Length: 548
Image 1 (cartoon, rainbow, N blue to C red):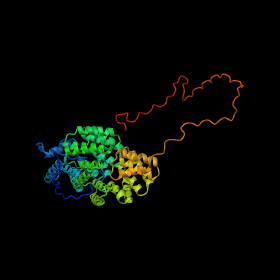
Image 2: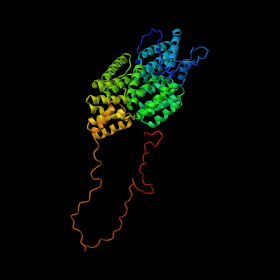
Image 3: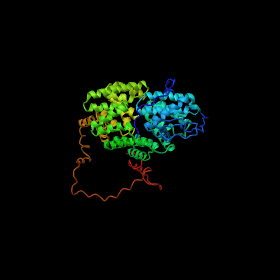
Image 4: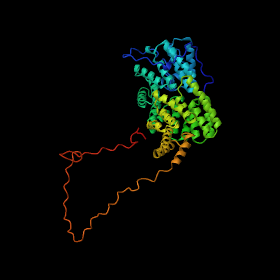
């Protein structure tokens, strides 16, 4: 079992100040690449993307194999592109710190250390480690520039940019590495996260398929499940996530797969199933704190509020991510505990300020908070800035729509709400926001449909918003009694002509008129087959991966 280390890893001595590595554009790719991979140390350097570490063997350049233990386990996870456990990650960081103290010119080890800091910062919600990561990656590039083969440090900078939600910079680093090493899988996790963050879902799907072709196994299956989920293909996402869990090779890898199954169950409105999956993840790896947050959400949806509050208090202490603090504040508010809610909102504001100082973009969470609990106009400005910076994911579109609605500009927000729902993601909050905007604009029919969809998708999607959705639906009432008043053509008007008398001559027997000559478009003529109507489209769900 893996537990949170008692003491955070400390950085090695360094005199290099941070210089904003993720904001520096990567160098242009030459028309012809003259870089050659070194035959020695093929796995040197690092890439820690979505929990993956690629590390050099202990004592690079020596003949002895690495000593079995936490460091070796972290390196084994690296070779598979899998997440390392927190304790193994800590051991790897300590090992690389000691090594670079006596080998300051070892560029691959600096890259390992830098990307390990990225992952530690991401999984501990401590943005200070991002600064340490930046320093280490700069040291790596100073010892060996990326143009001379140190693409591992570039990949580390891409991972760092994603961790800071700077998806534009992450995309640049990932595409630079891909252009130089198209057959290496290491750039693709960076690119997938960056494309998804920017709302470039078609590019993300292509990158996911390429990653699957280059790196088989549970990590690729996890990415495929994410891709299917983003396209709204729930059955495919679930089947692939189950396969990833079955093929997981380590406890950390299996915990991540079980957590994904929990998320998918929660999105389907099955909190009991979600809770079971999160509990299984924590039995596998008790240090998987994201599953503690998942438990809290599922417990709240099951009205087990005391347990939910306890779980939220645990996770916001050990992993104080702004979104978790916001969720806890809203749960307190839904229970009428306004004082506790205000305490959490004050904590959230402090976390957001610290994130900005550390160069982390938490605009999405900040805008969600401001739209519902603060200044909606400030939320609009935050999301406008994101949209203009080409960060146009479904989450940004939805938050911008809701901020505009809350600021009294529902008509302007409609286009963004429709865009969020139209991406294919089955998200109850998206449907709720669109339904409320439609209701505000007097579009009762569509509003009723989207509010019903939100509650059908996940009846407990939010402790604050779900009851409001039910109230709005009740206020709309039932639709009018169905259909037009008259579904059949009216009877013909009585003729003004007199009825024929009995003495009138009976009509002559008429011959049938000859059939008209078939037209060129419709009938058979000159030996041609008649035109046929187009075959009906297959029903949805007929294919293995059809949209449900």
